[in-house]
Image (tube, rainbow, N blue to C red; front, top):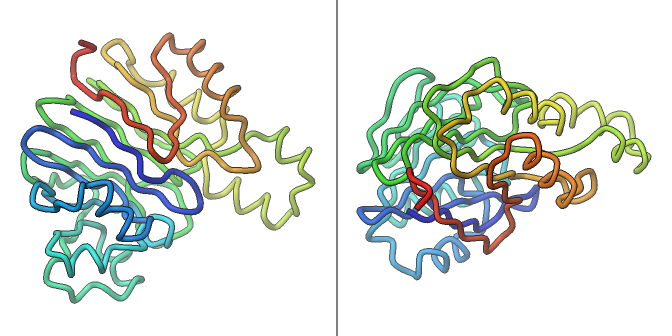
Amino acid sequence: MKLKVLGSSSAGNCYLLQASDGTLIVEAGVHIKKIKEGLGFNLSKVVGCIITHSHQDHCRSATNLMTAGVDVYMSALEAQRLGIDTYHRLNRLKGGNVAKIGNFEVLPFSIQHDTPDPLGFLIKHPECGTVLFLTDSFYSKYTFKGLNNIIVECNFEEEIIDNNNTPNFLRNRIYGSHMHLKTCKELLLRNDLSAVNNIVLIHLSNTNADEVRFQKEISELTGKTVTAARSGTVIEFNKQPF
C-alpha cells in the first residue's frame, strides 16, 4: 500500500490510502481537481472517502466527490452542519461502530475539537495493518493496540507561538483545537509502538511549527521512521516494513 499526501495544512488536507484492491480517501479538504489529479483522473478504484469534521480544510470537496459517485462517510452532526445530510451518497458514522468500506475497516472514535461531533479513525486493511488517523484534536483520551502505522497531527509548539507574538484569541483557539508537539509525544508514548513502521506528522502549522525539529525529536523519542507530510509526499505504507 502507498500513502499519498495531497494536502496537509490549514490550506487543505487530503490523503490517499492506495491498496492493490482499492483506494480510501481520508479527508477532502483540497480542490476536487487536485483529488482527481492525485487519482490519475480515475475514480473507479475509490471505495469511499472518510472525513473527520466539517471545517473546510477537511471537507471542501465532499459534495463534489458525492456528485462524482463516491460515497462519503462522516458523523451525522458534522454532515448536518455542512448541509449535506440529505445526499444519498452520505454515510453516517458513529463513534465505536465499525464501517466496512471496500476491504477497509474503519472504526471512528470521538476527538476533542471545536465542531459538533468530530472523529478520529482506526483504519484496518490487510496491506497496511492498523492505522491510527488523528488530526484536529488537542488531546486523545484513548490508547490503541496493535498499531502498524500512525498518521497524527503535530500542529504547534508553545515557544514558537510566543516568539510569533500570536494574538491571545488565536493562541487560545489553537490550544483548544489542535495538537501541541508535547501532547503528540505523550500520545505516542502512551501507545505500544513495537509493531509501528511509520509515524507521519500532519497538519503542521505554517507559522507555529518547525518541521525539521519536530521530525527529529519524535524520531529520537520513538526510534521509528518519522515523516513530516507535505503535498506530494508518497510513503510505502505496509503492515510489514519490507
